[in-house]
View (cartoon, rainbow, N blue to C red):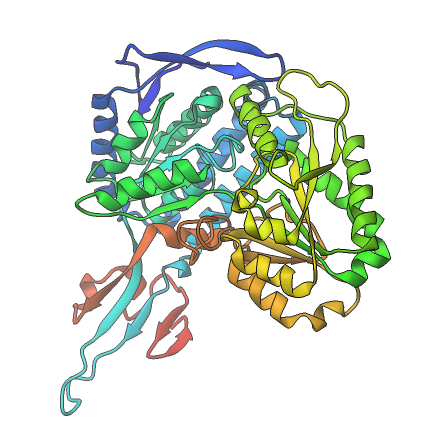
Length: 525
């Protein structure tokens, strides 16, 4: 049952008088459940409870945290069809997408459970002392990662499960030992409440402290601003627009104690078509990319919004094929009327730029809140001169840039903002002729794809989902995979501490049997 209330720790609360509703974009109707926006006092209470919980939770063993994470996954599964139904009604997304995203969410939670249960993720390092060393004794130093403190996670509009209430940021934070306060996304507040109820049930079943998790409703910026400004909050996770992420980054930087904001803020994900590949299989590539551009109505952060090639007959043929194929894809519903409106505005702004031509667009009328996909084209010279064309259009839109030569193409790559992904389409060993292009792409992206599409993010230890700003606010970290836990911890050293007082991870006898760096050698002894 959806109550429309906030979870302040393990208690439902609705002290405020501001309410809002979610929206079914497929039916173009308001959903009748009302959600109560959290008051300043409720937000303050949630942070206080999280701070109290942190003092207890940070001391919990990896196995105890693992039990909690697995219990969350189990409770989400127990929501069964109810969760899928609410998810689909609040997003306009199909059931298959809901089931896939739920599966990814469960996998993330259980992956982090395995990680913290095994324990080596703390990166324990021991350099034993040499008290009789001359001319100065060497101290005994032991280092490991420790949790930062309460974390605020902002739900993402386009991933109500995998990037929201119990998504990657939340799972990684809880695994690290950090309580979480979620600022639920107002577009899918019902989905958020159902997931929050599962987390609270799991917390109670596994003996977690009250305040380990809270879920805050707010249709405006007030609660988010209060949370990021609060001195007890120690880090922030955000997935969304550059404007939103930048605002949070600025708030965090102006605090008396600045804190990290790990924000993923958009990307146009450049794709480079090398000449030989373009000549040999341009039609095949066009078909593949028509599907990638429109996948999920283009509402993925890895959508291929920029395609680069060298001018000529082969690129012209590719563009014509892409323009034809894009029209053949059935249009689909966007997440919300506001997102649809923003897409239409961004699309029109792009195609109305000087010297931009449309090479393919859906000619038929579409249902309300459905997106009409578009592929446009422009010369490399114009693209370089007009930075307005460098910005993401969130939806099924892509622009093909015809470059005068490879040198101009490489210049475009160097002038782009930071990106989540880059892709190079090559035939045989063609790519070996372009080492500078590869190097320039590497400087601009977090993940470089060979002969594929950027859409689709595999959840595994080797995934990097991040990149130079503004793709993310700190390119040293990934937001996907078990290594994303490193965002929510800091290194901490003990010097000359008695063995009995050290955490188990750093004791001489290694009671947890984790892998450690001991005097420069990795071992489990």
